[in-house]
Amino acid sequence: MKLKKGDTVEVITGKDKGKQGEIAFVHPKTNKVIVNGINVASKHQRAQRANDQGGIIEKDMPLDASNVMLVHKGKTVRIGYKTEDDGTKVRIARPSGEVIG
Image (cartoon, rainbow, N blue to C red):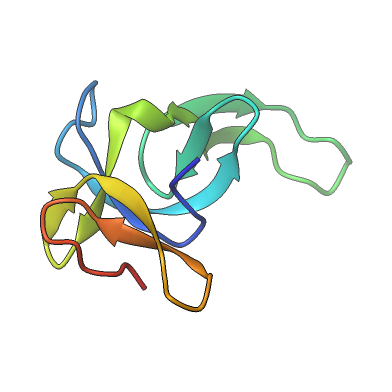
């Protein structure tokens, strides 16, 4: 998976199309990401203890990684890989070839 925790991404399809957010969790086995403030679902939760408060909480739900694109310098870009001269593998922005930090 080419996306990492902390990357800023934009949703390219679905109900939240056009929204941007930061990746909170990455699940490589299922190819899903959780983005802060995107794909929010309401959940009715009961109070677990006597002094706890129940109610409706909002929870970020996973998105498929194919439905988001990385934002690099204000534009959405595809991600590629390049091997440096010293043997390290780095991510690059596809159109420009710039290294993604």
